[in-house]
Image (cartoon, rainbow over all chains, first blue to last red; front, side):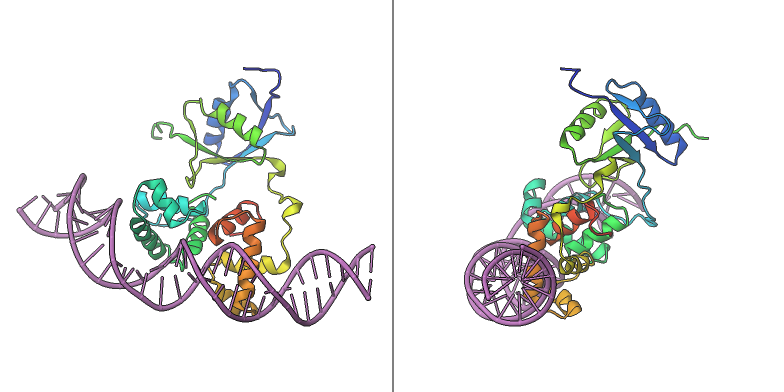
Length: 123
Length: 123
DNA sequence: TGTGAAACTGGCCGGATGGCCAGGAAAGCT
DNA sequence: AGCTTTCCTGGCCATCCGGCCAGTTTCACA
């Protein structure tokens, strides 16, 4: 493709974990079009770790519940989620019910908020 | 000192500029050991832009809308919000409708998610 | 083999939600 | 004075949501 219209992307790292920072630096260091920022340099974008708040007992959510939860966070209705996952609306409701129970939420909005707070999902 | 068989690094993008996001996604998609996060997936690190977190001025929410939004994020129903703010359920619906419109959301859950993403509210 | 968990499906139903219509009252700006 | 914005309220109604009941299948584990 064209290489002259794409300005270089400068990335800066703001990562506490030195091992992760090293690995990212190594991986990103030799990609054409991407460069790591020098000290004090203004970067195009920054890579940060959103070191999740405490998620003590990694609330046991099943894979399917996580699927439904993710689509809920995208604003999907039960019908949309059902279509997306190729299951019936009843099944979606079943999983939503389990999520409300496990997350101790009063409704789907509360469930998404709780999950986001606990780092179960990323908004 | 176990030999960590370098777990895959999952990156999520929080970038407003779609062109930049596309370029980054394309560049990062071909690197071994790095993968982009799917919806709702927990990411190892997040790539953000400096001024990405500021809400565009044009999505100005009124004080009352912010009140309703905050209570929505707490999982409150229209009835609960009405009691909390000493207004009628109809008025709550009115503000919720304005929020859905301004935040370009499909429902109250989507509205809360959008607001949290844009930093309008803090979960 | 049985026992349990997970996923899936259905019906029923009260209540919540959101869109539509209509209005009124208070505050500030030109 | 007009005018605009925000906030407030009401009715009506189609749809969605969530809880309740019931069932089947599959698969891992004891």
